Structure formats: C-alpha cells, structure tokens
Length: 450
Image (cartoon, rainbow, N blue to C red; front, side, top):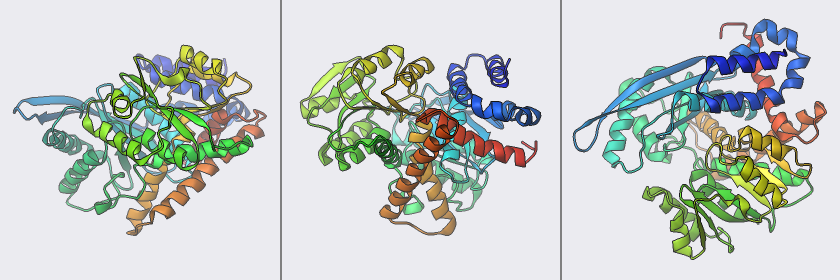
C-alpha cells in the first residue's frame, strides 16, 4: 500500500463521523501522489503526512450567555489550530448551526493550503460556534461574542493565532469580539483580529477581498486560455459577502453575472447583476436576516426558481460562492450538458469529490480550486496584520493592487507546478502541490517539535 493510501485510511479510522474532513484529505492526497512518491523516504521518516493531516491543537469549550428574556443559553465553541509551520495560525470564525469539530477540521486543513498559497507568513486555523446570529438582537449577539471571547482569548494573539470573520461573523461580531479581547487583555493588540472596522485598524476593501480576488484569479485563467471576461455570462451561487464582491468585480471587468442563490432557490436576472442599486440591495438582503434570495426577484421583477440551484442555466462561467458540497454529481452533469468551459470554485470545497473528478475529466473544461480562488480574503487579512504592525494605513488602490498581483501569482505558480510534473493545466493539483511543498519544507527544517 502506498504512503498516500496508508495516510488516508489512518485519517478515516481516527476521525469517524467527519465526512467533510475525509473528503478534503482525499482530494488533496490524490493530487499530491507525484510529489509524495518522489520524496517518500524522507517524508515517511519525518512523519510529514501523519503530522500534516492532524491538527496541532483543538480547543473546545462551552459558551454560556444570557438571552433577552434572561434565560441562560449554552453553545459549543471551537478553535482548530491546524498548522503553524510558516507563521501564526490564521483563519476565520464561523457562527452557524452546522458548525462542529469535523467541519472545522476540514476548513482548517484547507486553510493551511490557502494560507501557504498567499506566499505570506501565516499558518492555517479555523474556529467558531453552533450559535446562529440570525434572528438574535444586537444585545444578544454582543453578549454571545463576549462570552465566546472570554474563553478564546487565552489561545490567540498577534504572534500566536489571528482569527477573522467567516459565515455568520461580520463587522459587527468582529467589533464585539475585539472589544472583549481588549478588555480581558488590558492592551490594544489590534493585530489579533482582522476584518475590523476602519476606525480601529481595519483594512480597506477587506469586505470585498474574497470576491475581488476570485475574479482576479479568473482573469488569469482567461488570459491563459487566450480569452477575455468581456461579455461573458456568469452563474453565481450565494448572495452573501463573497458573492457581493464577485458580482461587483465581474461587472467592472465587463462580464455579466446573472444568478444568485439562497436556501430557498435561485434567481435569474437576464439584465445582469451589474448596477449599484442591485449591489446595495444584496447588502440589504443579507442584513435583513430573512435569508431569502426571492426578495431580489420580487424587487427587480426577474425569474425565481424555488428549491433549485442555478447550475442548469446556460452561461459561460460557473462560480459557486455559497457553501461546501453545493455541487454534487447530478449538478455537475447539468453543468457539463450546457457545455460550460470555466468552473471556478469560490466557496470552501463547494464540489463533492465525485463531482470534482467528473468535471476534471472533461477535456474542454477548466476547473479552478477554491483553496486558490478564494485566497483573497485571508490575503487581505494578512495585509491588515502588516498595516497594524507598522501602524500605517494603505489606500484602497494600494491594497487592491497587492491583491491583484498576488492572486495572479497564485494562479501562475499553480499552473507552472502542474506543468512541471507533467499534469498539463491542472490547477487543482498545482495548487495542492505548491501549498503542500512550502509547509512540508518548513516542517522538515524545524524538526519534530510540532
């Protein structure tokens, strides 16, 4: 049995009931076979894969807080600190009922690759709680965030672990979390959280960064294929912060996003989601807490399809921006039936392994992996850390230029690595190889302390 297969069996056996983590590890290990086989002796001796697939530390804790009726509520809190070989842990906090340890291990594992790809000195982590901020008052959200940070603060710091926002954690939550951290520490360590408001150390274009970065990556794909974004139609899933950034940058570069989706279904807007009024309404939709994309169709008089995803629409480009496993094999076959050439993952692992293999087997399709495509968010978070450290503030153009440059480098580096190993234009394998090799080299150099 190969080293790769041994490690995958070990992961499944030692992490029962965590299918998302199993799926992420399998996708990565399968694409790393050439790299692992070429270095098997030294990697086996150092236990690189055993350590690479095991978090360095998992912190779990209860979060008791008081609701507006005076009743004590109790949620679960977690921080999965996966790998710090190249820098302090970095990764978002997610507040959503679906959060559990297995989901966060999958996200932390993916984050390790994503952070490595940015070329910046940050390691991988993820955390959060099964708390749902939807439907809660501002006071309840504040009390929960304060209770959550009362435990988390012991495990984070500017040179230890720097959390950011994720699903369910926006500027409001980051503000409450930072305020409590500052109170507990008795110090103004503004580099401990990113995604902060501009008034206390936040970076310009951070809210848009993941979406902007995804489109910059797509732009590099189009250049490689001697194509252009001008006039292309795009199916976008989700309507949250990431999708909001994606549709803005697509429109700016001449493409026409035509779909959004939510738990209730999807909308199709043939005129395009291309105006400031429509961008602003997406913010209103998110702030309303209704979580219904039908509100967009009602507002702008376009088609709404209940209980379905937009992958059957005839477009040029697919960009799933919603959540994991949003595209299964059935949906992938719908995409292929429409002769779509560009499949650009934006959400974390939005495609099942079975569907991803099917899409990658299509000779005329370009598939780009989320860990590379959505690196823009953590990239700008790391730039925020730099600004905090130096007590400076870059202009929006300066941040955007750095984002554009590094996202282009991420694409080009992945493409070059895949070509080097004889895999052609395989962006999935290339991204995994580049991300892995940097972290593995650092782990080798540092011995077995971690």
